[in-house]
Image 1 (cartoon, chains in turn cyan, purple):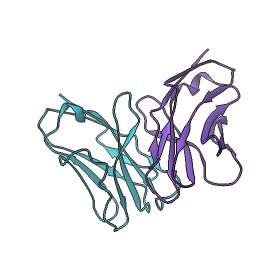
Image 2: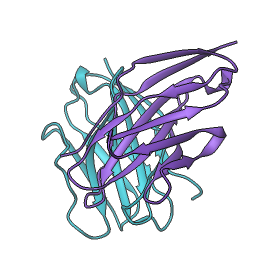
Image 3: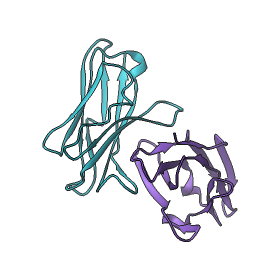
Length: 113
Length: 113
């Protein structure tokens, strides 16, 4: 596609429920990143995918968070047993080869009530 | 390790006046530097980047930034600010041997008419 697409744009969920956030990167981009932006905070790196290599999961805050990327394209970030502190905007970005800059999606605003 | 500091949470200027948003960075090797802008309820939009070459980089919407290696700074500037420049600005850095972008906490710019 022309840009990075994320869905849903907004998600309200009850504490303890699982959520899935989707990212559809720019076609042909081999690198995909997830970041989290909490209110008043900068962007926190979560996970990085590059082609068929094993992902860098070093930024995932707990084992409740996981992500996968199918076929080197679409990625899903899953948060299990959501907590209120998970409320944030989750941003996805893709890059042609992991160098230079990144193109960001509009994000998914997650609210855990 | 790499990090970015944006020492000002907020910058307020009058329309038509010069705008400067400060950024300093720390990397172990040579840096790639970026500025992004975020409008309300939107994703991050790329403004400009420094990879190599001229220290003065020109970007979108009349913005420019100067790479200063000795001061490890990459301040964003615009000679004449517009009300429409009011947004949240992020500085980001990555080491050329790494793939993760590290972001500053962001600076909210308000341009008053």
